[in-house]
Image (tube, rainbow, N blue to C red; front, side, top):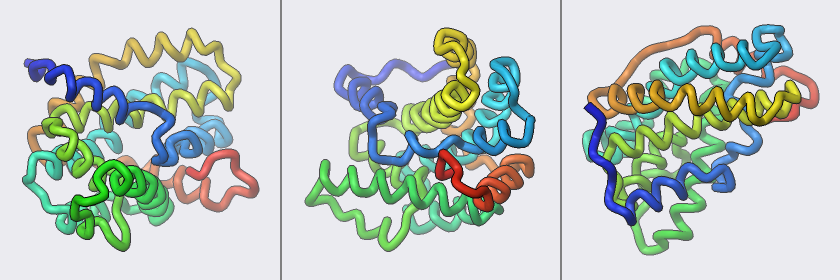
Length: 218
């Protein structure tokens, strides 16, 4: 059963946190799509949809479960850092998460200048600081998880659209079709920490890091 809708103020903050203009690096991170396209794994809209489905139920689920646990107070930022490292075998993927985490931390410092964010220094993974920000916004772990899953999906979808020159309407339909899966994944992420691993994404991340002049940071 889906969680009840959040209060109006929290819903507005949820939408704000899902905005691609946030300084979390989402506009320069493809979530592996750039390398998947270069390797011929994704060549069209159908392939992009398959890629997004796989990303949602693996990497996005794991990251969202950590963000939800931080938001609900089940994990401290320090413990969440350890759990994220343990669930991110690829050093390239860890570097991308930390880069996005720095962007979110910068936002948090500006929005809540008097809040103690020392637990996220000197480094913080994106799902860890996302959980803290969600908590500061009064959001439940489940809604934090939904934001995280949704942005993971749309970030890769947008990158695929740009790199393959796809019809934006086709990509929009894909993301709408995946909405229910995002909801189901967020429900699972809010229950307990996930530990799924997808070696394909680890390989893509490592190969991408070695590309000459990539368009995206990851």
